[in-house]
Length: 403
Ligand SMILES: *Cc1c(COP(=O)(O)O)cnc(C)c1O
Image (cartoon, rainbow, N blue to C red; front, side):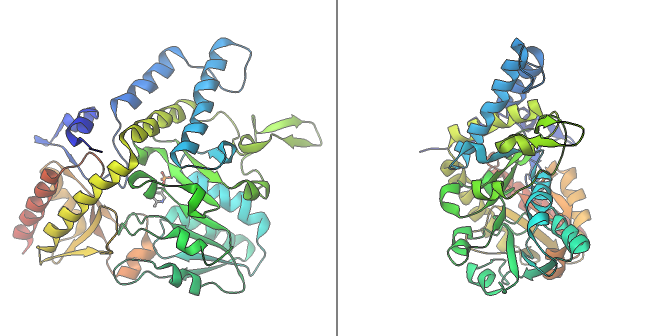
């Protein structure tokens, strides 16, 4: 199978633009990815000719919009190889998804003194909802740290389990170090409920939920080349049955009376109010686009980019990269003595290179690594070796300015 990066680039209109008079080199995919023409056109088509509210039936456009919207559930199930389509709950992204697990599953099922095991690699979206439970109902947060190379061996996670551990929450891929966590390896050693943040991993590698062993797995559409405000969480049927609704309102109910309510069945009972109809339709198109390209092909292209970038970055002996696990994703968080991360990103920006600077919504990890801030170059399927070369040139220019 081949992967034609030039053909893929031609599908993304924004990649043809210039920034500060230079061709755009977009290396901030960890924050959000650009959108292919097919997604942009699908959004326009939905609004121009096929728009109405969903699940309200009884007229042509509402039925059409409902059909276009509901078919995305099956696309997401196929993309993640989920055992059952009704295990897919639409959300506005990973943040809403993880809050849904905290309010909907953990809050009613955990007692004061019960423990949640978290990895230090987590994004704030997979930390703060658990802090709510600590603050409000006396749940205890325990932490497991990565190895010096950024990896998180399953044995280390399993060794941190105590008799009071009730749940494990862990990322599938770190948005700072690119660390890939062996979820199946964790599952092999425990039956505890396992909440997995797939926000990064699902973008860069094939995910097979029938084999992974997660109980909850979230994705966020805007990192998957889809619209912002789209996403989903897959919840294993048995866990879904243990969940109570997190948001109340229209659509999630069957009947409402003055003194009682009954809820809808399946995923609809967790989807209150008018959803991001067109956003989800756009996400469906983005996932079909990815499946057409083939996640294996995308992963192979990005592995080659990662290896090339890693070799070239290693040759810069004045640059530090956080996390160097062999199988990491193509994400490089960098620091340079004498230059602040914000200065690096500002100078790179003047050369048309977009990277992110700061703490990357991962303050516990940054504290663990002992770096106040880093400049992060995060690659996607449309990036090229020539763009790695431009990054190296830009970093070398920074070094010359600050040395
Ligand atoms: C981006 C990201 C999130 C949060 O996703 P939102 O789209 O902001 O809801 C959570 N976890 C990881 C690892 C991420 O990269």
